[in-house]
Length: 397
Figure 1 (cartoon, one colour):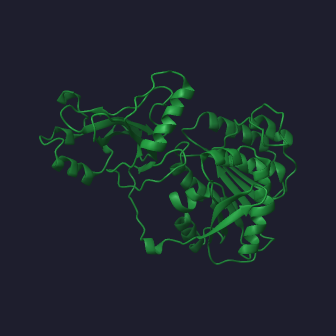
Figure 2 (figure 1 turned 90 degrees about the vertical axis):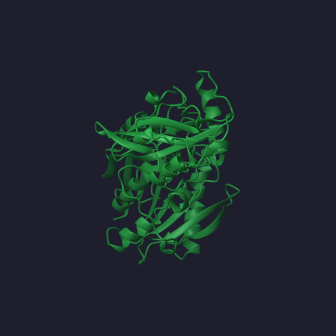
């Protein structure tokens, strides 16, 4: 690669490019290296190559080309250990990305399933923490590490001693013959009517990308009432797909086992309203649970729901159907209390899911308290996080 082909950031014009001193400067600046260009940010991600046998790939959620279209490979600057990937991102972009360094060769097949299988294997075994990104990475079931990024926003860190503390319980479901970790957090001051909020994929919101501090802050400031928050963990990707994929037993376990268990073990009122929220398959699960128990919840939060689902092998109610869940829901939905509130949302960069969410809203439009909105970003936990807290405030206030 000739110097004229180097990335446009001025650091690549330095004479000591690729030296330890140069890499220390990169670490001090942080990556991606950013230059504003015509209302966008020209971003350069870097990786310091460790071996001649490894290749590096990236997936910037909702921004880089899909793995079904191409592999987003890093280029190497000759005679250096510098590998780089360039992309233009929107101003003030927030989102996630994964970095993979692998000794395996990419499949050149156009077959989507084979490409996905290969990529998932790389994410589980070779996904890396971006050592030049100052934002904390987080683990995910599909990838051992995911990096987060917030361009144009100041980074705020919180002392560990000041972080809200949660209590962890081990909930064993007789119906499911499974034990699930449950994190519990109570935002003070509690009253007899303080609502109970259950969030699926709970480990994401209590541990990986925690929202407890924001919940405490808004509660202390009087922006939202005190509530009891239950963060129900998903075990792993395989069990999650089973549990959240229209599984009657799981919905029954939430309503008939988990809610009584929480109320009994934490001495909570049986008259307080219960709310349920989820993202992607979790949103599908929450809505499926409402089909089975129309009076069990005061409201739902449905973010980026997987309403395309059509496998009903684990549902006695829907067994034999082959249509997408979206087309079935209005035929199976029983009357719900007039006070039931449903909040539907998707990201600005989600196309099919946004259309599905709009179709779902049209089916629920007759409900007195159904709302839909679009949040910044895509199908991404980093983008769900802020929207989740904002929607919780609207839901329980």
